[in-house]
Image (cartoon, rainbow, N blue to C red; front, side, top):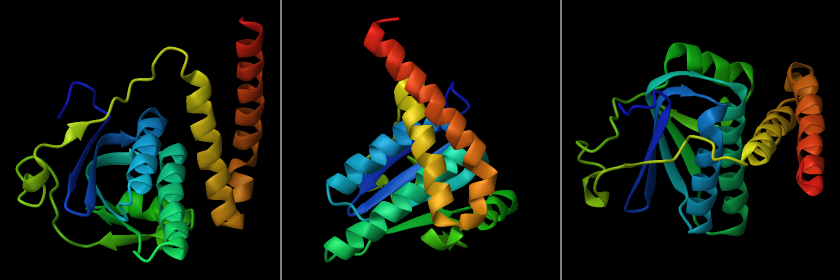
Length: 189
């Protein structure tokens, strides 16, 4: 594992995009994951395999980003001939429970296989070693991180009405905080 206990490794092999989450799937790694997935979807990739074997837990921002990825691939299905899908592999019982409780498990195929994504995996060999995404927020990226968090929580609320009471206060707080950050950026404070 890398020096950062929360990390994302990514790679491409053929038409498959591989993502391996190490440590906590949290807000700290959500922004680079979102950016990477948007880039890959924009390039025409429609099959994502997310290996959660080393993922210890997932927070709501990370789950919202995963859900957003699933929704974007479903939307891409409606506009392209290729079908899109997110496969979650090696999901532990606690993470599976959280996916189900938020009603987002229906966006994914949850594979019950022993897939191990990594440099030694024969599946990823054609693409070479997997690359680590930069997960430490750069200076001045706090507003961007707040935008990702806000979008993630709005996505969770849109997917299942039962999520509205869980996240409405969080969304309100994030929206207010983001507005303050943007105002401060405009005034140069």
